Image (cartoon, rainbow, N blue to C red):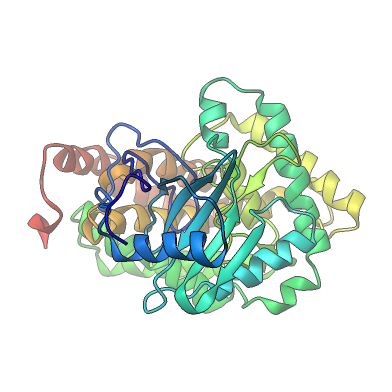
Length: 386
């Protein structure tokens, strides 16, 4: 397809944390994308236009970016008259859309509002999806939106997924020991060594290893449910019907009951007072029990599950956010490191089993993080510390 007036490309759009559809999320200050400007000579864009107009016979009059992605996927918004769609573009030599299709079908069967798949061509890595709009939960919450209603909807949807998805979760890979350990190993590699330039003493390395083993045991002791893995305010869309719209679910696993709840209530992008979080946790447990789900013997046990799987998740995220900068050249997540670290510090102060990690963080990490972030803000390139 030669460049023409048919294709209109607009830039200035970005994704969320890792690998999900963030539909028309404007770049925030300090967050940049490596995808750059799409150009009309893009071969994949020509393929998409041909697929939409010739094969699906849609009267497309506009194609523009909806989001970029930390993987090789990208998302485009295609307008056909009064109807808007989102196209997932996943080059088949680099990405496989079949896991997305599998999980999408599972979630839709549970009643979750995921983007409906209107058409799919897995061999060419193309999906035509329902457009859930442009309003993220995060945007609405930061603008002072009704948090009780928004979180109430999100908790209802999550409880339904966990209970209705019991049978479906058997089709998912387990969120097991190896996955949990591999994720936490990102923190000493990318956060401590690369970002903070810390060299661990033998005793410190042993402390981290013992702490990770404790967190793994605690995680594996929780009831197992369908786990979205990134159920947070940048992957939930505010929609008029069946709120929320849910995206970024293709990496779903079968794992701990508290994991997605932590993603939502101890969000790396927005924080709430502890008392409010605890109230939401108790409300969620009541929802699970009302639906017949497994929710522990008491509120205290369930809160412990929530807190400890939160430490596992946030240790992982500390590593991921730094890797996104040093490996992928994306510094936009470094400002979220202090909030993420604070979650770990707060929980460590509440549980005696994490006292050693608490001391390590206070003595070796807390003072170094603002210095490391300042070095990056001063303009040091990703490869400068290689």
